[in-house]
Amino acid sequence: MYLLQKSKNKTSSRRQIDINGVKDGVLMLPGNKYRMVLQVSSLNFELKSEEEQDVLIDTYESFLNSVGSPLQILIRTREIDMDKYLSELGEHLSNETEAIYKTQLQNYDEFIRSLITTNKILTRHFYVIVPYNAPPRTDFELVQEQLNLTVDIVSKGLGRLGMHAKELTSLEVLDLFYSFYSPEQAKIQPLTEQALQLLHTSYMQQEAI
Image 1 (tube, one colour):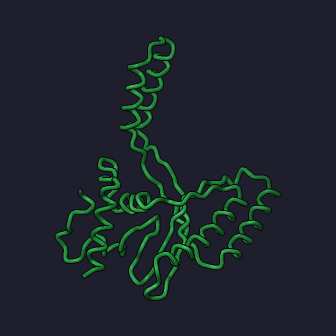
Image 2: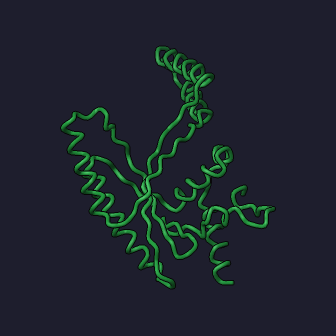
Image 3: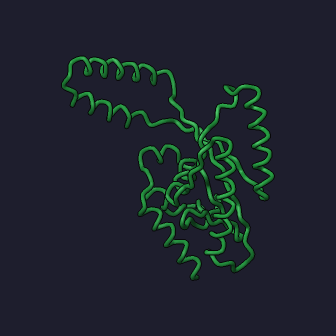
């Protein structure tokens, strides 16, 4: 797989982006540093009334004070793969038997195709990265416990703001990096559980050396 191919450079791609591995949704970094990533729903602050905005600001301030550790906020804008969408639309169109619905689908298909000829269709995702820097030789179970405690506080705090937080799986965490460093390849060759297992095996072999 492209992601796991050995680089011809002296420094491997994984070392350049400082990733040791991903296990149970926990990103493992050099220097006993660990991270968990939450994907967070958006909130349209501008559409709120002035009173609601004031309440949100106060709640957000209270939330930040309750966490007790630094957080990283990531906003990721990606181009949607419209080829796949149009392919599924075409399949749906070919299977439609009702004339009126078939005409509507054809018109919609033409509209989408004309739209993407001059515009990129983008999607925006929001993430909160929860850190934990562990002392040397700390058991991974303890790392998970400490991260989960903070994640629970963050999730509940975001919930009070009317936002939903979802923990990324190991594959989703890896795919986030993959889409950053190989955006074009990520469109045509999605990551699989097999790729994640290969990365984890490589990490364990290096640890044993």
